[in-house]
Length: 318
Image 1 (spheres, rainbow, N blue to C red):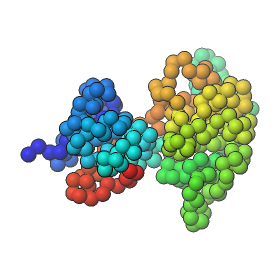
Image 2: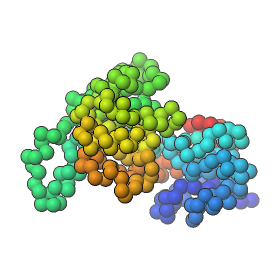
Image 3: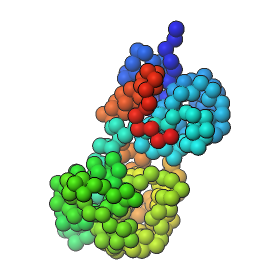
């Protein structure tokens, strides 16, 4: 009898597929899509029992007659129609393992790069300009600044743990308040969003993209931030009104931004963000490391095995 099939529906390519395949237990058989068109995905979903990743609409769930679990590739789930999954009784789970640590590190990377104008210094040096004095008046240390965390879930908490070493004051906004003991352990203070935006030197976003959070940071919210503050977004591009952010950065209303996610991905080559010196941009790679891919693959396959044993999947969201 053939092992149960697991369709890995992320378009990462052979180098990543090799890492994933190496972690697949013998009890399972992992398959990769050579064609990532919607038609190819619909065709394969008719036979598979488990899917890792992919953008799944109601039409996909309608043809997935044997599907027993949708395992999101990371902590984002905005590409999955959760209502359609619930209607079919198909559980959907996320993969925080390997994700939260990588994103937390990337947040600090972006903060430091924007504060120290890393890309401006690097480009100047390559162009023969020795900016040893010129950048000093407009560069900043993280020490002593106020870091505002919008969302204090798994990733936000990991950012807080790492940021403490830099000697920052930390405030957070989240609909669900942490227990007093956890607030004390992390060194964070709860604030309403408006107050956080006005108080923070660095605002870092850690919220999923939902109907409630889409456009959460728009022109009004950007206008509440300090003129010398910076915005960091490693969550989802749709959480920010990108047009309003471009205007704030281009006019100097905000000092800078570090962005790993965008309203449309890949980022359009004509995006005005690419012409701004006060922005550090990365192509949605906050969790893109060899170690993270291995950790995530192990956790994903472990959840599949749980379902095969009749156990509920970990980190279920629907």
